[in-house]
Amino acid sequence: MKYIIITGGVMSGLGKGITAASVGRILKNRGYCVTAVKIDPYLNIDAGTMNPAQHGEVFVLKDGGEVDLDLGNYERFLDIELTSPHNITTGKVYRSVIEKERRGDFLGETVQIIPHITDRIKSCIREAAEEEVPGGRKADVCLVEVGGTVGDIESMPFLEAIRQMRAEMPEHDYVLIHVTLIPEDTMGDLKTKPTQHSIKALRELGLYADIIVGRSERPIGAHTKRKISAFCDLPPSNVISAATAPDIYAVPMELEKEGLADVLTTHLDLGKREVDTSWYRIVTKEYTNRVTVGIVSKYGIEDVYISIKEALKHAGRALSTEVKIIWLDAERYEKCQLKDFDGILIPGGFGKRGIEGKIDAIRFARENKVPFLGLCLGFQLATVEYSRNVLNIPDATSEEMGEGTHVIAILPEQEDVTNLGGTMRLGDYTSEIREGTLAMKLYGLNEITERHRHRYEVNPRFIKKLEDAGLVFSAVNRNRMEILEIPGHPFFFATQFHPEFRSRPTRPSPPYLGFVDACRINKKTP
Image (cartoon, rainbow, N blue to C red; front, side, top):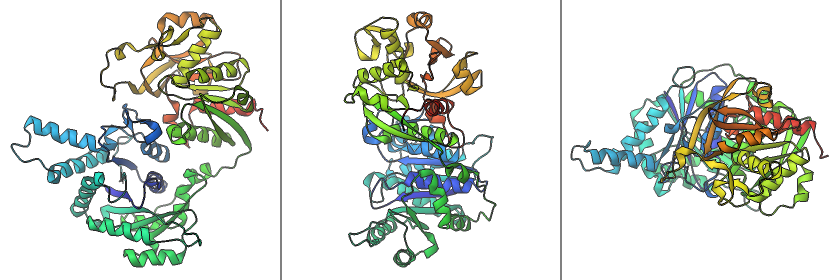
């Protein structure tokens, strides 16, 4: 097993996750099997209870793990499926060690950060790295991204564990990539001092960068590379420019041009291999059409819905159609704005805020034959809207929203939940698709597997009434409704699950493909 450690310096939000995913893609293009681990130094056990407006999207894994959005990037770039152990948090590590101490497993030892916490961190990394990937084989390379920046108090135990790992491993089985900022001053000069200080902080912890990836708005020239090389004690070829790219999927190609592949394979003693260029052909495909999609949400922050944005991009590339997204605040948008879109999408979410605005947008899409895609809460609100305006139940609502006729009710297993973390219906569930439906046309399968994250479902008492009124539930999981659609509409389709979590650039999600295609066919905007 080869390990590639990715650390960050100067400031957060530089794109360590995209860098890590791109490094993995470069190796995957050469036929290597790659897996990934994300270390998050916060005390939360997982990302499930965190506010997405502060932390970004909560990505859901196949086993139900609620994790950092970077794991979504790993899955999309590497076309793999990860599990909960691939996201290591301070909360998970300390809980594990404290539980062992309470059981008496340490036989009276004084439990300390070193060696007990660091030993547990190393075990977590190795256990995740050794987990079999699809096909029943183990990965050749494991990417380990350390969240935060060098110097953060929270990251210290993890960086110490990384230092110990290096001492325990053969030279060619380990490489450390440090991602840092190369800012530009008012005169247009790229400044290396922040990188020098970041490398100094890394060395004070006993860690040494083998490769420096410099993030900047424009490419780093040879002069700047030589300067970083001289001050940071590594060859100029190991200083890689990572200028801001127009599309994240182009980053592996840009890093290839910088020679990162040769530096990596030499350092890890992997040897030369022929490069599969199919990825680069897909992500550089030119657009011949353009559609505009309105997403009505209560968060106007793209990182909250990054998987939706990427799934639309995947579908658009497959259809040579650029998808322009306009974000609408569900509480403040004007209804007249809705006529400007080729399609309307209602994403998942929780709570009452913005609900009526979303329902109004769904009604507009249904009555005006505008392609519509609803996801999770969007599926539930499509049911509410149909109940109000077709079944004539004016107070139809979800149990989550309070009083009224609950056409959406809490799942039976959720009725007595006390701890919120990790207690929703989470992860992979299968659904059976009904013949002759749009769902069958999109998937081409009788049974599908998709990822879930919800507490509420269509109230079984109203299913027959809704179907008698023309709504079609085209996929079910036992007695639970999973997909709804309206026959005769250009595209009115909603899913209780989150199909975006399984969408890949090479394998776009079927509901997103159908939605973008319908937007293209029914295009209204110039």
